Length: 320
Image (cartoon, rainbow, N blue to C red; front, top):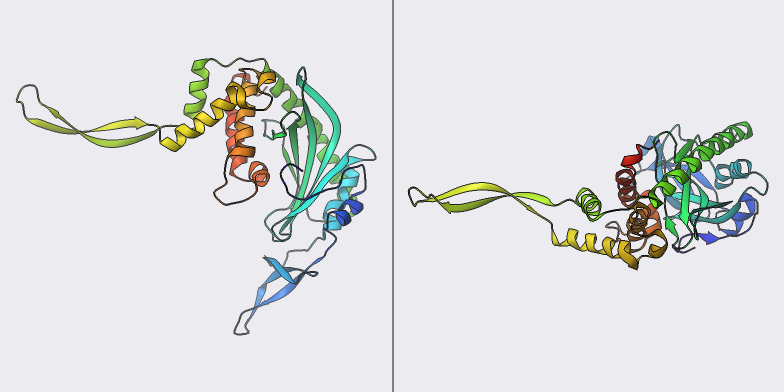
């Protein structure tokens, strides 16, 4: 995978096979917490990887451990036979979060020669940070841009209870498929509208001012009173764009104006600008927390930047 995370497991295989090939075939158990002096902590437990004797997190008494094979097993039900190919599986950190990505065999061209592919990302945690979640993640083929974005009236993320019950798995599968169909229809329409909408110099400037705004600071300014000739000091608002902000704006503008992968296909449109921001988030932006670019793009602050850009660019459609 381009992002360097996980293990590629291409082909329409079962989730059990993908878990084994991706080295996720380990178990987690709850263990009692004891302080260094030997005091027990009765209301809390550690979740521990049994194969590595490594603590993954601290959870409450009511937390139920769901093993990787059980958390991801219902992927088979959600996808159906030959409905998708499990593409990648992996773990973040030491296994605090585990995930699997499946490619749905549907490709849609936004403009001629510029297709997007549909992926479904399933993830869960062993540290109590998240339930089982399914995320719909469009990917632009020409540049591998991750184009995830939430729309009004169409969920991008579906949360599912931690459970081992097969009937619950099937209910969750139907829920994911129903939400997925709604999401793909809406997001395709948004992308195609963007691709037909040109951006002017004025709309580009407005976009940059909204995404990466200038700062206003108070500054003392001394002038001469024309009547008395005496110096007069007043406070004024000074609007300025920080050097780092200017650098970021330039990086995105350069991608938009031709340096970005697929910029020739998107042109000077809102689709082109959305991909310029996304390429910057996926490949150029450095995470302050040091996490992987893909993780930052899908789950971190990079996702917030992309969502803000999407919302601004889609304003004129009122997301209908």
